[in-house]
Length: 388
Image (cartoon, rainbow, N blue to C red):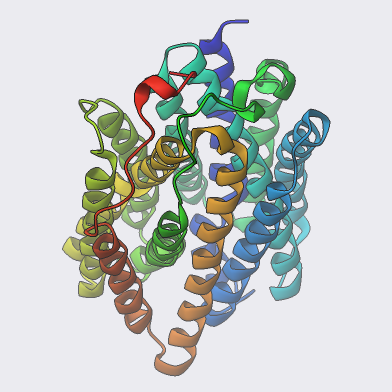
């Protein structure tokens, strides 16, 4: 089967798992709060449950090596994203949403790790690394889709329960379309050793950067719709911010993938994306329409590009351990994400505001960029990578 078809299926899988299974909570928060199901502090704890599940799912994926468990977790994760989103139709109140978001966190982590470890080596083996990069546009397109569905639902006066049902239906349709075309672990080079010159380079600094990135981006990514709803008093204009965030995230992946490949340039691009996001987080402190617009642009455009660059840098340093590193870095990412909503809940509880959490988040992104100022390990020579 054509690698293009399989990589397109991977992109759609990330659309569904992340846009529907994972980030569907963001446009739902204004509904859940206005319906009296939760308050802003509880919203932070529910988001934290999602990222706790994401962390546990990523850690579990670290220990998966054989083809059958990889395939099982990939397909189970996709189906769980659909079924748990459907179950949210009947959920009401804090604990039901907490448990369901925890489950979708585990499921989405399985999908992200497995799709990353299967799609990227497949793209490089086919001589189409740029297509592999474009797979990371999937979450942005999923956010765009769920945001537009939320806008349409709100214009029709529907409540949160109806929107959960719509999300589940769209997720099921995407899953049924792509399931026959997903890459198979047995035919992917992701788990096979790669001919190497020397020992693999360390990636511990990437783990720290990815954790700080998870902490930094997650507060605006989780509460952007709520901040916009509060600023525009629930008017329809507030519903435009989230789909615009997703569209810009997808465009950012495409733009970064089109850059001219130069030796050891990935870390410089990564540093720029981190600092752009930091500027976007600080812009959200303005709490004005202009501040939120800047937040959407500066946080949204580099959002998925940063994820793509971290994974690319990991492949440059240790191409023979693609699956292990994808799981390890995703676990670091999830740890940072878990801290973000907990920080937001504390900020809301003690100050009735997200400003202190946004300051910490933006500072974390600045620090992550500073880590990259230090000379890092050299990438594995291109001639040593058999998948390129």
